[in-house]
Image (tube, rainbow, N blue to C red; front, side, top):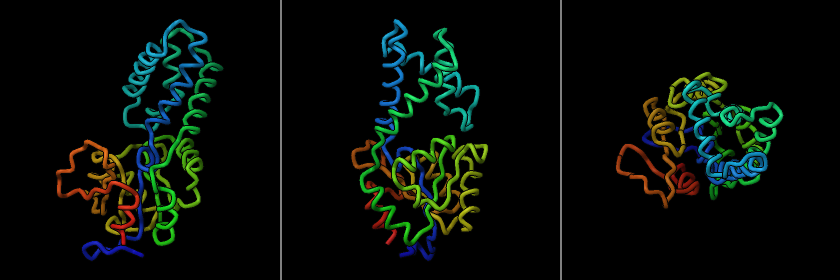
Length: 236
């Protein structure tokens, strides 16, 4: 079932992970809720006030570690938040970190049709993941989603030392897959991070935009899909 698009033969599929294979926001909100609930037992601040401090801490870390995998590290965010609150301790930081991820994983919901579609596509294509995050957590997400055994290749920004849209991330994926860029199709939810850079390298691209999205789909250069079923159909 290898697809022919304008005389090109697609042999490998690259997927973004967060907000492409599962819904990120509900899981993240569940993780933060668990953190603030635990922390509210020790502080006078409300969850809304704690959320503000968390965002301040997050921005501090991102400013310092811009465009690195560590800039997304929840342990660093929580450490900085507790420091701002004057409550830092290694034990409390690790405890909140564990609460965050336990709640996050429990709340993860795959994008409709993702698992069944990937199971079918994996029979005909090499399946890879390119993602901006620390490797350990992304491995755990794939296990939680029940698709780890379908993934032939994985590239994280932690491994490469830079983040999408840097072309080195995509080149690394092609090298692992032993494919040329024009033999690969990139699927992701972020136009600037996933789609445009992959297209510039000569990849086929499918921009995953839910039907409920208000995102403008006005550019004829970008092929859009609303569901995983649409992706599978276009690859026929």
